[in-house]
Length: 363
Image 1 (cartoon, rainbow, N blue to C red):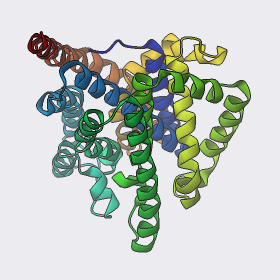
Image 2: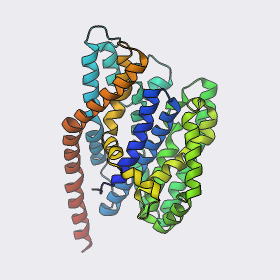
Image 3: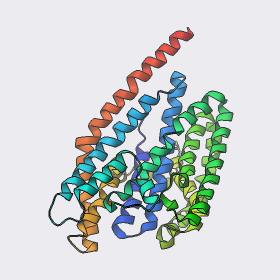
Image 4: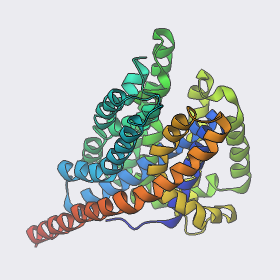
């Protein structure tokens, strides 16, 4: 089990705020940065959990890993789909039960991004679920990669190996961009476009465990006041520039810059001596949004789109975000918290038994 860091909930809160700004105010580029921040944070947290299990037990239980992922993601996703089905049964709504069924198949098999990327028939109210698909496609291969890297390398070798993987993921992203522009694919939603932010977060987690001295030096540079101020200005420019969403330049140069900015937030949230500005990450409102960020992500875009059939766009945005907040709170209390309790049971006791058995074999 891992100790929950309050400021990391604040980082989630920043990410979901960027997404809400994108969907609610139409500042689409902000959503790109929010999605990237979610990816970096996911890589950091999941890889930390995987590395801890390898260190504790000497191996990985893939069945347990995917059971934990399912308990975290599927209950709230099913709740969202049930709510969407209920809306489709109401008179005057644009979405049909058949579309909800198709969206359910795509989202529960984590293939929404492939539907979007290939330009197939879309269900707009569920199109945003492409990010979940990208993440889960990454985690089809990443646990095995972590196991191989940790077993075959020393602490220094582990950091170097993940750094090489990160370099490879950057090359794959650039190749994806070139091929997608030529073939007309929607490179924005392809898993190979977002591998390096996920691996960058993973590299941070591995470095934290294997080379804390190196991490301290990295933190000292990245959290310097002048560096943070410069990155904040660059990120603000990216968030407000309408062309970020589809600009090839962003996917060449902007993704690395935004990844560094995301790493800065994670470093600040986990620092024993964070910069003064990082105190906002522990603000109760940001932490509140962070703990409910998954359900907020599920509901906000769909709520806005459904309401646009009933009222003007601006009113739909305001009411849709408010409705998403209410639905996210219900999801958190009625669905996610019970599922998280089951997830902790799946994770804790078997790990302790495996660790005890391993220790007994040594003695």
